[in-house]
Amino acid sequence: MKSLRITLGLVALATAAAVHGEGKAPPVALKGNDPVSYFTGPRPVKGASRLAYDFDDTRYLFASPKNKELFSADPDRYAPQFSGLCTTGLSMGMKTQADPNVYLVKDGKLYVFSSPEAREEALKDPAVIERARQNFEK
Image (spheres, rainbow, N blue to C red):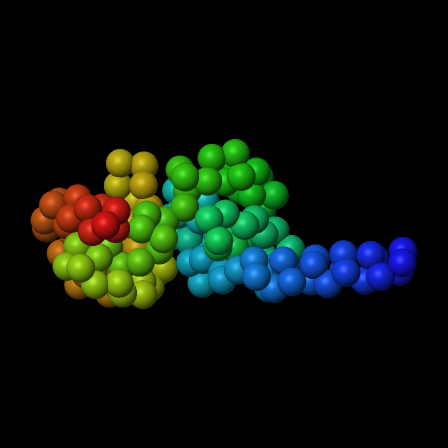
């Protein structure tokens, strides 16, 4: 009887893991760029898989333990806005993948874009960010 309970317990754990997607790594944000590096350097740098931190169903990689520590203390400060979708595309109601090398840090927030032209549109029209925020919240 004891072995049956153990077996059933293991089956329940395996089922829960399958339902919740446990055992499967979340997608890597910013194509592996360190999110803190957008705020501290002249350009983003690649993170290392050994310095990973999962936040909001996404895995972030870091170039240094210090950057990982900064992020883990306040992930909302460093994570890209709109789950890393193109800000300009989102402002037009489209969920568009962003290129993490085309970005803007504005008012302490990281915004990523699908192209340099999309970034320029946001620079020309500050309402792009607010429209993206409204669409993202829907």
